[in-house]
Length: 398
Image 1 (cartoon, rainbow, N blue to C red):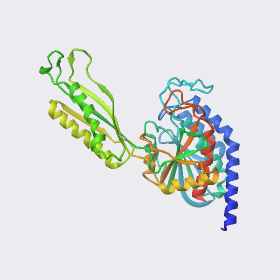
Image 2: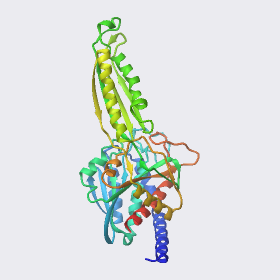
Image 3: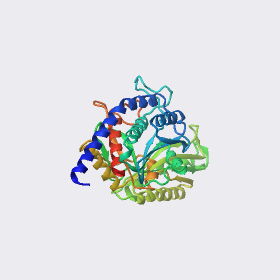
Image 4: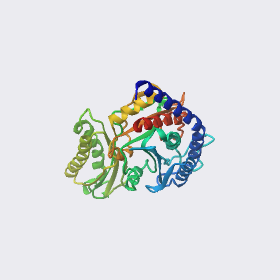
């Protein structure tokens, strides 16, 4: 294809994506508000999945329900053979009491879309809408993955187990970011989120009277020393250039003011972005527990659970996404700092080259953060997300 013909096609695609997005934007906002009114927690997304399935049916998009328990997978097939691109959006809400006062606020007490997954679901429905009308420009298949249970990091594995990623060649995902203005996007090279591990340490001592500690073995004193020593993992076991967080988030022992209890239970999380740091943190926790046990006559039972791995953005998919956004919207993608939060899209990214796009969702004058009872993202981010991901799909599979 000559340069003139290529430029013409590029301009035609830009116009087509813009027009299709404009036509469906009002409906996508309506769907988002409906989902926001009716938030559902992890693996409870029956109504949400029904809304998604009904919209895919209306659009004439082939789909399956019940994937990963409450997930939905839609398929937009191009007119020519080619690779399979998966695009994943999460659907679940959080156990938070909404305090926004919005006219479409949650009708379910103690449940709220405080992370913007309602935005993500509406955006992916918009991508499906646009691509279904432009199938003649697709060589291959776009698989629309509406995933449950991201917040408890179980949904991606459940969908993978049910075959949602079979035959997939590459994958995209998105997450709204209230730190980024609407109309702009964030990209992160390499590790974008952290591995999210958890641990539980049960310190066993010997109960006794609080006035006679010499006749007991105090697990609380041992736990107190453990908390301080665990922080040395970050400063002394892990390379200073590598990210690592060790946090004790729960500690419980005893019920009475004058009794030394038999045991103390500590629970915490470890966040790392490099495999070496992850291994060093686990080994450090076990080693420090052994030392405290020997020095203070307690017994430490350590349970260390590996959670989601770090999400690694593939550089080729990232660059092609940025190029597509530039062609469709302009020079609106900025480098953004990685996160130490967990993201179970990482399981899909372990299987194929993948990239998660950050979509700006801030409202002017607000300083919102996700997982907040007053979280109010700008719905304008939906249309920008649709344009970015629809154009990326077309360019990846053209």
